[in-house]
Amino acid sequence: MSDDPIVGYLADFAKELGRLGPRRRRLLAEVEDHLREAAARLEHDGASSDEAARLAVAQFGTPRVVTGRSAGSGVWRAVAEMRALGWRGGFSAGALIVAASLAVVAVGAGRSTVASCAPHLLCGPPPPMHHPLREDGYLAASVLIGLVTSVWLIALGREWSRRHKLAWRGLLVVILVGVAAGLGTGGWVRQHAPRGCPPLAPSSLAGWCQTQSAQDAANRLHRAEWYWLGAAGLSLLLVASVGDLRRSDSQIGSRTTSAISLP
Amino acid sequence: MRSELLKGHLDLLVLTALRSEPGHGYVVLDRLRRLSDGEFALPEGTIYPALHRLERDGLLASRETKHQGRARRVYSLTPAGKKALVGKRAEWERFTAGIARTLEAAG
Image (tube, rainbow over all chains, first blue to last red; front, side, top):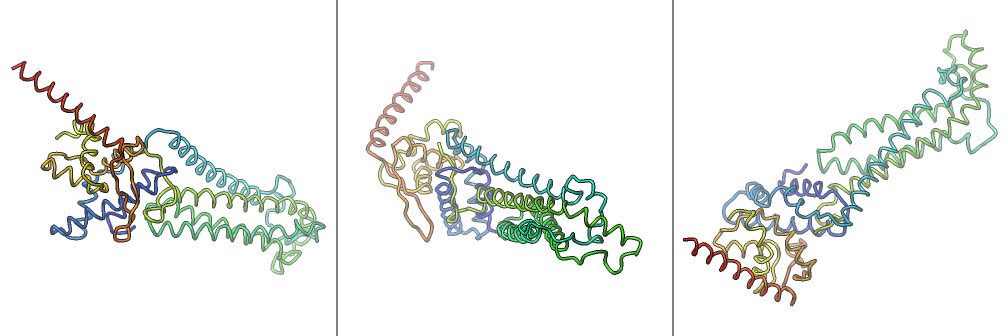
């Protein structure tokens, strides 16, 4: 977070506004102009730069006090509340989809043969499949997951660098990196790993691997779709989280694009 | 002056501060401070909801200008605002006169 008290205040103010509406940008611009002018006046009167900024912020009043009078209760506020709920709902839904797809990919697609072939990496890939689109599903979905996660991380990282209040999102970044890496690596390995048991696998596993490999083929078709579902879930997370960031405090001052209703 | 007392009359004060010439929020506050000899002490941010409300009611108009690279919104009285100021001022004078008479009568 910036050391500038005014920037910090504007971030808090934007967070307090927090909703979409037609006049949010205008209000934030007015507040910033006011604080800058007040600070300049105080600095001219002898205060240090930092002291002047802090005093200007203190005299302006807390964001809650000011926005409490600004937010109003009109239609825009209701619409904004619904949008905010939509972002959160999208975020939650995306997280749930990712979690569900992860669980299915990890445990199996609901077919007993998958569970019986737990050491998939030892068993190797299945015989050639007849559906090229599905056969390529693992790799394509993995690439998509990587792309989506990258965009998401860039957007999140930029915002995180602006404010340090996004600690929970930082944790989420780590989790998603792990998710994406796991899904991507898993998809690639499952598509490209050598057939049959690896050279170092115990010879006692050879027959078991071959048997399970054939049974596992159909499951791979099924599980590729869960990879796609995981990618879709990540996409939803991306849209919802970026929307939520835009809603909150990345859009301060001249960069603000959303707005809030005023009385 | 207590904020609660001031709030009920903020519209009148804002209109008064803008009567002579247009100004942005900081200038409005500055004029109010000078005109009241520092008597009015509201959190400065509370001026903006009042400005926006008066604009929404058609008593103020605003335009955006640039000042040192920053967007600045300057407010001015509309004809309806000028008329409202006259009415509010008359209302205030009747009100204070009534209070004064009551207090004097009570001794």
